[in-house]
Length: 281
Image (cartoon, rainbow, N blue to C red; front, side, top):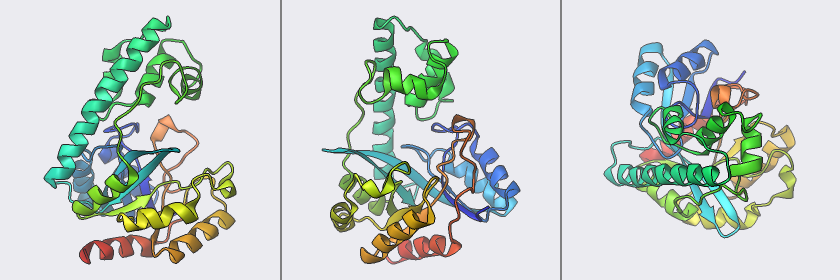
C-alpha cells in the first residue's frame, strides 16, 4: 500500500465519500499525503484540510479540469493551488454552471428516448457539488433502465450515445495557464490508457512539449493498471521534458469499487518536488 495518493475524488464531485471521510480513510490506510482533486471544484478542500490538520495527514489542495482537443479530451490536475484565487474560482463557477445545464439537457434527451429520470434526483446524487454524467448514470441505474453505471455510458450518455450533451470547452493549454496563475502545478492525468498503454493514442512525444510550453509541470506516471514497464516509460518522458512525476488511484469510492485508495505506489519525494515547484513561481 502506498503512502501517497495524489488523485482522489469526494462527494463534492463524483466520489462517494465526503472530504472528511476520505481523509479518515487515508489515515486508516497509513497514507501520509493525499491530493483532493475533485472535478471542476475546490469546494471540498477546506473540509479536507481541516480534517488533515486534525488527524495528521498532509492534504494537497487540488482540482481536476476536463479539457478538449481536436482529437478528444485531456484531464489536467492542478496541485498546491491557491483555492482563494478569484480567477480560478470564477472559471470553476462558470464550468459548474455549464455542468448543470449539460446534465439537464441529457435528462431531456433521455425523456425523449423514453427513459425518463428526475433531474431533481440527479442533483441530489451530486450532493449539490459538481453535477456530471456519473450522477445521470446513477439515476438511470436506480430507475432500472440499465444494470450498471458502465452500461449507462455505453447505451446512453457516452460520447457517441443518443443522450450525450456537449460540455464546457477549455483547452489543455488554457487549463495549464489557469492552474499556474492560481499558484499551482499542472499535471497531465492518466496520459495513456491502461488497457493498451503503448498504443500512445495521445502521441506524448508530440503533446508533452506543447503542454510544457503552456505551463505543464508534471505527468501522472503511476495509475491503476499501469505496469512497471508503463511507469518506467512515462518516467523517462517526464525526465526528458522536465516534468515532475505524479500518481494516484483516481479513487471515487463505491462509484469505482475496483479502485482502492492508495493502491498505486507513489514516492513521497514527488509531493515534496511539487510543493517546491510552487515556491519557485
